[in-house]
Length: 135
Image (cartoon, rainbow, N blue to C red):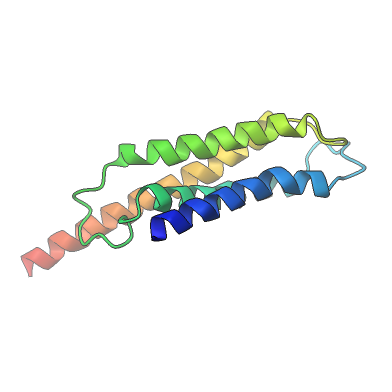
C-alpha cells in the first residue's frame, strides 16, 4: 500500500514540475544567472527520494544493509534525470522560458546528492550492524 502511495505522490510531484512553469512566467528572463535555478537541486532531490522509496520501499526499514545494492538506485535516478530533461524540453514551448543545460546539471546535482546521502546512510547502517555484533 505504501509503495502505491509513493508512486502516486511521485506522479503528482512530476505533474507539478511540468505545470508550475506554465503558471509562473517571468517577463524578464534576460539575467545571465537566475538564483532561482538553484531550486532545481532540492526539487529533484525530493523527486529522487520519492522515486527511491517507491521502487525500494524496504530501504528505510531494513535491519541491515546487506540486501541493498547501489545499482538499484539507477532506475529512480534515471527516471528523475529523464524528467529533468523532459522538463527543460517542455520549457522551450513556454513563453519567456527556455531550455537550459545548466538546469539539467543542477537537477542531476540534486539527484546525485540524494544518492550520496543514501550510500552514506547505508554504509553507516552497515557499520553500526558490525559494531553491534562485536559487543
